[in-house]
Length: 217
Image 1 (cartoon, rainbow, N blue to C red):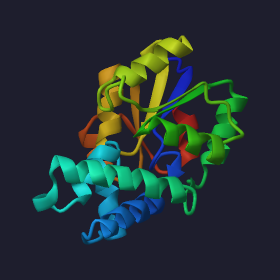
Image 2: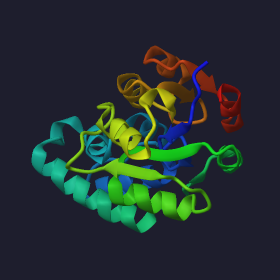
Image 3: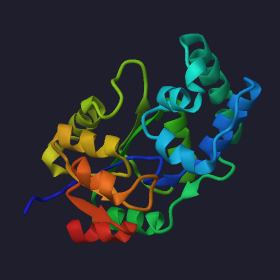
């Protein structure tokens, strides 16, 4: 059996329930542009591939041009900057899981398609008690998930082989990233997508609650 030494977490939909703040921020940006809002459930499928793709999915197709995308991204950053912590919170059981991993000496890191500054902000404010060795969000110098570049960079910087990582995520993007990086893909069912999607894109285990991860370790 592989001796797993580290866990790489996705952020939105895996560690933190950010759905409502992201939806409220995007809807506020759409309102300011004179466009219709979307119901909360729609954002489960808009989120996961970075802010640019979130905006592309939220804009009306007939208005989804480069100028509108750029305007909406700028407004979204402004709106999210003002409300990112209003409703966001760790999922039930995450604190207990992180405590257990620390007690076992398992190294931890975060990789998100959320902009880097917001990724670091969310982790530092919402998960301040736990020692994440690496916290990496989207930035111009690094291809976003499902490209494995970020995951492999974290692997190198932490000094563990990719095969020593469990990778936890809630979307097909995460499962594809884990597979491409050579990490063990673990799908979480409390996030924004379905178990079927996770399995279809490579999940080798599914968790229904965070502490179930300890069985894999």
